[in-house]
Length: 77
Image (cartoon, rainbow, N blue to C red; front, top):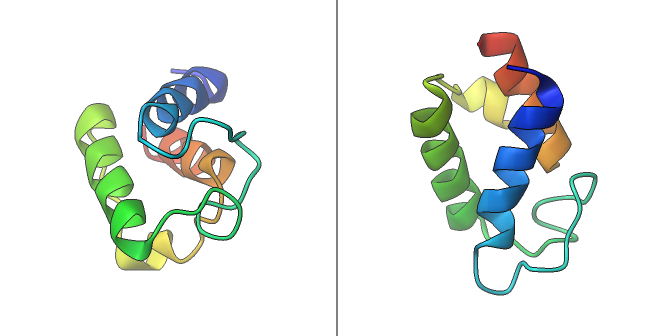
């Protein structure tokens, strides 16, 4: 699966969440999109399930944007 496809799926998930309809893949999840730390964890957990990957706590520290998350998943698939 290509990174762009992964990113599109992640953005579809994010845009479907209430209050996060106006965001882009290069926006910071917490500072610009407004996710709480719990919402970030829920997103990561859901993405792990959808893509069949495991994101460690060390990996999590490197995720700031949906683009970062897509890049990480691409590297794990």
